[in-house]
Amino acid sequence: MGVFVFASIDAGSHAVRLLLARVGPDGRLVRLRYERTATRLAEGFLSLSGAGKKSLLAPNMERTLETLKKYSEIISSWNGLSGMRAVGTSALREAANGQEFIRRVFEHTGIRLEAITHEEEARLSALGVTGGLGLEGNKNKKGKKNKNFILDIGGGSTEWMLTEGRSLVRSGSFPVGVVKLAGLMEREGETVLEKHIVSFVSGLRQAVSFLPAGTVFIVTGGTASAIAAIDLGLTSYEHEKVHGRQMDRKTLERMYLRLAALSLDQRGKVVAGLEPDRADLIIPGLGLTINIMREFGFQNVISNDTGLPEGIIFDLYNRSAQGGGR
Image 1 (tube, rainbow, N blue to C red):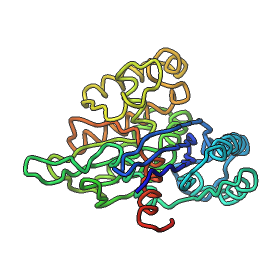
Image 2 (image 1 turned 30 degrees about the vertical axis):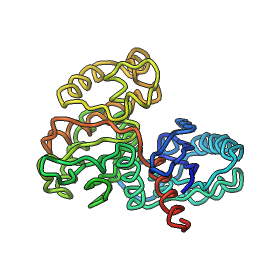
Image 3 (image 1 turned 45 degrees about the vertical axis):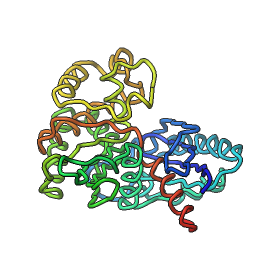
Image 4 (image 1 turned 90 degrees about the vertical axis):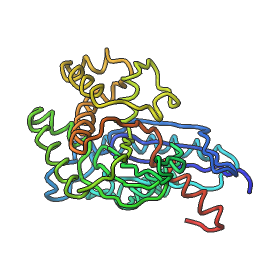
């Protein structure tokens, strides 16, 4: 079997990501080009109440549309693509004008953007995480594949996945993400933020009442990359360094206290490893991660820098290898 090159687009609540990657006969994914633009598609419309549908705001849609135009040009200039897929997550699922925006994207860019379900998002994210970390070889002392508890912290929702090696065992989703929580904190203060995080963790405990001993805790998404980059004190983003970084709970607790003591402006300027567009999102992201570690007794967490975009490409590759389409 030859080499396959695919393109994927993840239009998230906070950022839009483009990935062009090659998958060789050994199934290994190699990044050829990666772009990320923070467009905050969901900013100003998402709420935690779930009462009634709200609409995406015009400036956010325009920023996202302009980004997708640029990404469309990049894809068009790439010869020999075996396939591509573009997906949107909670912002497009929840917005009253989500389908209208999807039509505009197609009219202006030719990109067929899909608002995928929670279940499909979890399936693709699990493919990206397990494939990106090589978890098929992750076995315990008895030779059995370890369970992995994966948390994909997004802007508008958070997906959880329980895998065995690369196989998805169970998954679920909560309409709580860092963009929502950051907006809540800005409006109502940190005490209300803590209340919602505790409520989220309680709901997660009800959904996942038991995890086997030795279960590996993995966090993916922008929060995961940011935490690892801050821990490393990086002055510029380096995928190879943040991907697979293991940190203990005490390290994250100290990080939370240090960042919480800074103003939003200070966070965006003086914290090495923290991109300015994540200065308001890092506190809710860290808060979710730490509280889940406490609830389930995790002492360590692995930061994962692959996810939905990589999962789309692995999925396209698997389908092509089997001789079928999407």
